[in-house]
Image 1 (tube, rainbow, N blue to C red):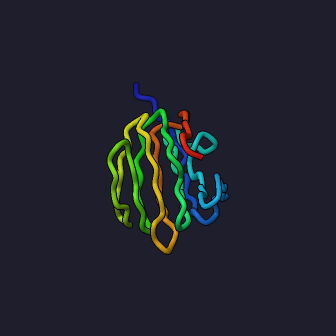
Image 2: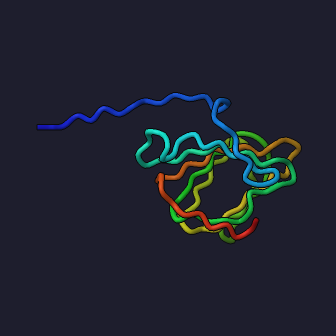
Length: 125
C-alpha cells in the first residue's frame, strides 16, 4: 500500500519577503529555508549594489545562481566570468566564489542551494 504525503504549496512575492543587509552594498531576502515548508531547498534573492561585491566565500553544498538584473563579474575557483541578466552559474560544493556589481544598477540574482542545513565560510568580509 502506497502512502500519500500531502505537501503544502507556498506562494510568495519577493517584495513581501523581509530584507537583511549582510554588509554595505549586499542584501538578501531568504525566500525558502528551514523556517518555511521546504524540505531540502534554500532559495535566496540577493542584491549587490554598484561597485560592491558579496565577498569571497564557500558553502558546504553546491549552489546555482540565476542572474536577473545588472552587470558584473564573477569568480568561481580560478575561473573568471562576465555576469549578465539571464546567465546561470553552477558552483560546486566547497568552491570559493565571489560576484561584483560593475554596472550602474544593482546586480540581482536568485541563489538556490539543495539543502536547508549548510555551512558558509566567509573568506573576505
